Image (cartoon, rainbow, N blue to C red; front, side, top):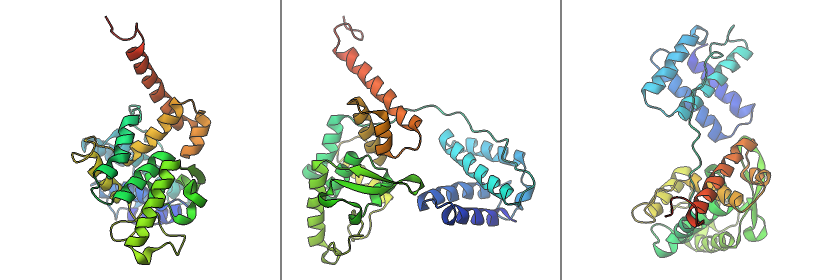
Length: 305
C-alpha cells in the first residue's frame, strides 16, 4: 500500500466510521499532505518501508521551516494516528511512529479583549458600517454572547434556535451537541439582521427553518474566511485599530465568566471543552488580571511612591 492510498483510506475511515466533522478530517488531510510532500517520503512510497528515522527527519524539516511547535505537534499527532491505523488493520508489522515524541510548547495564555474593546467592536458597525451593518453587528454579538467556536458560528441555522433567539443547539467538536445562550443585545441584533436580510433577499425569506443564519453579500452561507475578513475590516486601521481574530471573542467570553466568579465546570460545559484542564487556562488569565487590578488600585500596590 502506498502512502497516498493509506492516507485516502484513513481519511475515509475518520469521516465515515469515526464520525469526525469535516473540519477535523480536513485538518488531518492538510497535515498528512505535508507528510506526503516531504522529500524522503512521497506519495508513491510503500508505507511499510517508512522508518522511525524517516519520520524524525520529517519533524526536523518542519522545524527548519520555522513552523510553530503547536503546528509541529499537530503534524506528529496526525501521522501517529495514520500509522496506528495502518498497524491496527494489518498493513504494517511494526509501527515506526511509536517512538516519535512531541516537542515542548510554551503555555501561552489566551488572548482576550477588555470590556471597553468588546463594546467598541460590537458598536463599530453602527458607527462605521464598512460591509453589512446589521449582519456584522449580529455576528459580533453572537460570538461574544455565546462563546461559540468559529466553526459553530458559521454552522448556525435558524432551526437551531429557540423561540425568540435566547438559546441555540450547536454541534461542537466530536459532533457533540450543546446548548448556548444569547443575551438581549444579541437577540435584538439577530432579529434586526434577519428582518433586513429578508427584505434584501426576497428569495431567502425564512421559509425553510434550516437556512444558515449568517450569509454573505450574495446570499450564500458565510464561511470561516468570511468571518475573518469582516473582523479584519472592523478591527484594522479603519476600525478599532487592534487586530482581533474570531477566537478572541470566545476567550473573552470565558475570561469574563471566570472573572465574575462562575464555576469552572459550568464554563467548561458552556464552551464544550472535553477536558477541564483546557478551561482552567482561563483561571490563570483571571488571576493575572486581578493581580494587575490590585497593584493598580491598592495604596501599597506596584511601585507607588
